[in-house]
Amino acid sequence: MKNGIEALLARIGGHELRILLTVLAVAALLLGFVELAGAVLEGEVTAFDRSLLLLLRNPADLTDPIGPRWVENAARDLTALGSTINLSLLVLAVMGYLALTAKRAAAVMVLASVGGGMVLSTLLKMGFDRPRPDLVPHGDVVYTASFPSGHAMLSAVAFLTLGALMARVQPRRRVKAYILLMAVLLTVLVGCSRVYLGVHWPTDVLAGWCVGAAWSASCWLMALWLQRRGVVEKEGTANGGEGDAGGQRSQGGGSRVPSA
Image 1: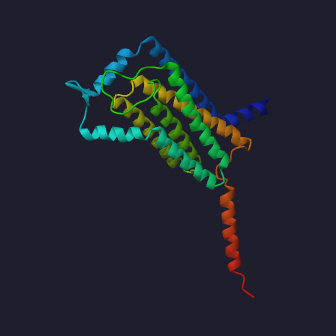
Image 2: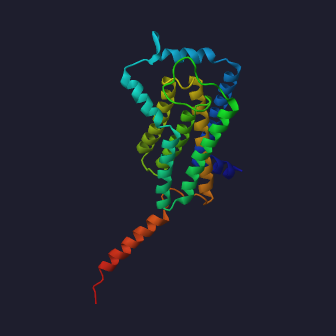
Image 3: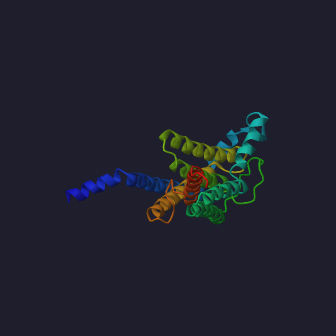
């Protein structure tokens, strides 16, 4: 009995603690999304959304966002980072790298994570069908419903998933923290740009962050589970890279053999 308890504590002190914290984070994020969705359906956040959206506009001219003109241009550049086409290109580039380094299962996992997030975003938008803000002119062309923000959600899915993937192959904690902080910063900037441009209510963006981060964390848990079963390659394993290195060693060894 005592040995069993000690073994359990040892496991909780290792990877299992991170898994437990991730599960709790997913549950908290999903709860936050459910609360936001309920408040949106009941109209409880209308005043908050309107006041924050108007706060970012010139009171004398609602067509003019606050700040100099270059800030509006910068917001458009930032919001483009979360577009479907740009995120798709980024994911395809990462998948190509993973495939070239003989981590094809990891590449499929990245595709499933981001592709599944795109499908989920579309379904949620269709389900809630919330109209776009009509208080101010839109600073970007939009085609879909408002809740949740697709840019905020897909940025969280893509940047956090890829950030976690990059962080896992870094041995230094400082570098891991930097990568994850940059992923979070990009996600936050994209979401804030949607509100600044007047194409989303603030609660749309908050909901997108919640469900996007929850989806990304859930995919990380799935990847970890598959890694332990040998389905997804573990960090540091790359058959192609080992083969290349072996080939180079063989060539190097061959050069030291005198010719006949």
